Image (cartoon, rainbow, N blue to C red):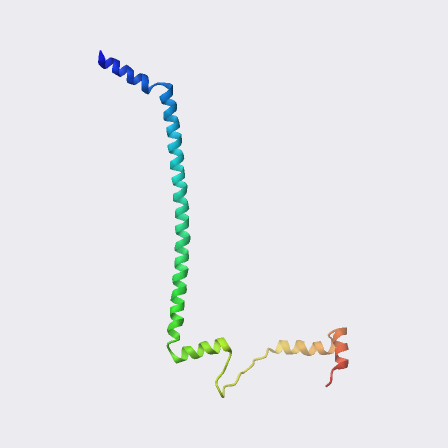
Length: 127
């Protein structure tokens, strides 16, 4: 008989409305915690992807800078960098300027009939 009493006591406790409410509240809070962890995981995954892209960019920049640094170890590389930065030439070198013919033609046309302002300016020009 004691087994039946114990069984009824368990049934009474586990099947009561208070226990049911307690279990529902417990499930609610546990599912809320799981959803919070899922959101954190998604944010971490996105942050990881951004960090990996930044790492790839940094590695590409590093390799480019290493190549540029290697070019400075030669005299030709140093000379090219100086020419690029300061727009200089060696003694005896000359600059060749290539002029587009279409631009020359349009400039000549402006002098003759470029409007009122150009006519006024042409009166004061000394040829």
